View 1: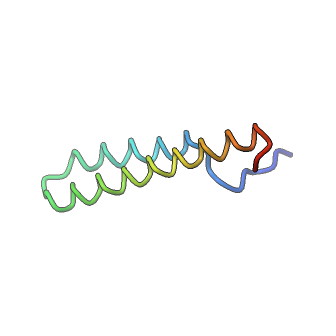
View 2: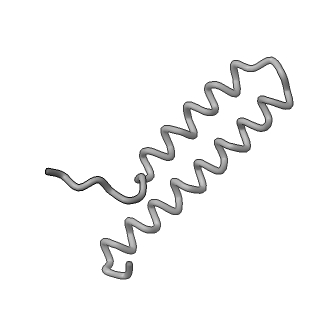
View 3: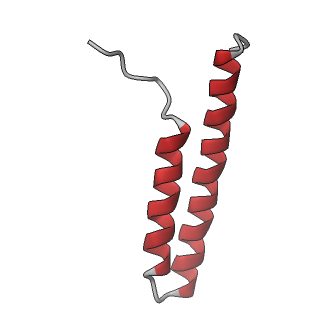
Length: 62
């Protein structure tokens, strides 16, 4: 049985960011749209951290 990764990978977070942006663009309320776009940026940050973690694991640093 394949073991589940303890942390989602970058692809997961980028998908969440994109889905959040799509939802934000559909909103008419500027405040809500702005908040969701901020959330999407945070998902992008998580994706970058996941990529860094993966590189470190490959390099044997993690």
